[in-house]
Amino acid sequence: MSAPTLGRVHWDSLFDDLEGQLAAEWEAERAARDAESERLRIARLDLRARLRHLCAANIEATLHLVDGAHLPVGLRSLGVDWLAAVSRVPQGARVPSSMLLIPMTSVLGLTLDHGSMLGSLADDTNGGATTLRERMTLGFALRDLARRRLPVQLRLLVGDDLHGTIDRAAADHLDLAEHDSGATRRADAVRGFRIVPYAALAAIRVQGAPTL
Image (cartoon, rainbow, N blue to C red):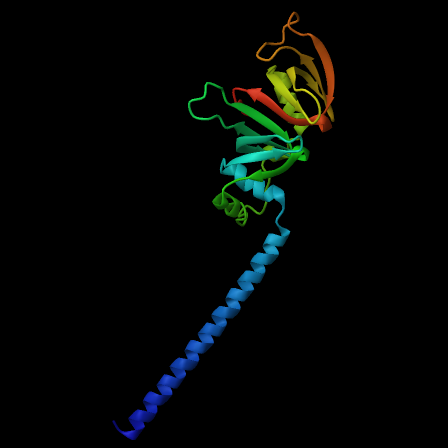
């Protein structure tokens, strides 16, 4: 091989090496920028955005409530200040599933699989746009139950559960006609009336998993 040829090969090799180093540096800088951008995005991420993903995917989870309850559920809907979920019933059990309305103030946390947890971190391509349902307050949802005359079980933060039918739902409390579980609101079945503040509720259970 002649001297000029050797020189050309040398320079080609050198430039190839420099190009490789430059490409590696650019890639490292891009990866660093992407990582920093992701850290900033996660830092701004709120719980509502993650719950929106989990509810949209009907993720199964265990809800931990402030009264000490651990409820296995399938997440369904998100409101202004509440979650809607369907109770998970063991396979073969002769117990009907039920819908649960959970005030956000009674939720201590959720247990779910790692894949679902990571999935809830995904970027919201809709820019956090809320659905009409997400604008519904707990009182609005309870007024719908009252309108449909659906029997409910009220799980309280303190004290025994209450069974009955919601007669009306106001801004921060409801009126409950108390009757036995499984009964309908007939005059001869009602044994009393109670005013219950929303702040006293850990969960509202409705048999049969109706939709909101």
